[in-house]
Length: 278
Image (cartoon, rainbow, N blue to C red):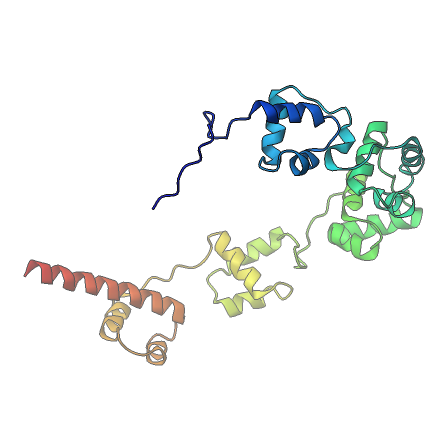
């Protein structure tokens, strides 16, 4: 049995229409309470989204915008703390030392009103710049970060743009290292080799990475099935796995299994067509 429809009148979008009493409550308490407080105290059957939507339609604006999420207005002393310490400390440090009752997002919002920039990074020393210029050319930003772990990747990339340096992969094959032209040419030249032998040509790269790269570049060899192999497989469609592997030593079990399943489907379709024709 279908559930009875609500007797409340609804608008064109299907929302229950607001009563005059609800609108009066919203107008009366909109500037003094947050939307969450309005819902809990006066409009429990309305969603917060519905309350915000009606407030917008009525043209109501909050005089205390900072209280929309239940936080009290910023005091003059709190704003002075932000103005004094934010240029030198991070938002989390300002919160931990001086404003534990304020969220990090609230501190960032207050700093934005003052037009304050985030705390500046520590200038690069001559020793750091020497390490940066030497290691970046050898291994890129990741190698610099290993030598200078106190520098973030963002700071390293920013410094790289300022220095105008470009890292050219040398084919070392480190994790995440782009493929060099020498590696790509080696992969194209020996793409016909089996996976085990091909991976040995790239000792610094994982076997899976080598095979995936060959597949992405569409360099995988297409070893077509010969007529003799197809005839042999037709004769042993129901043979176990071990026997099939012995019959096709140059094929992987995955390739044999896929070809066997395909031939089985074709055989079943042909037998079905003959049965329907009879």
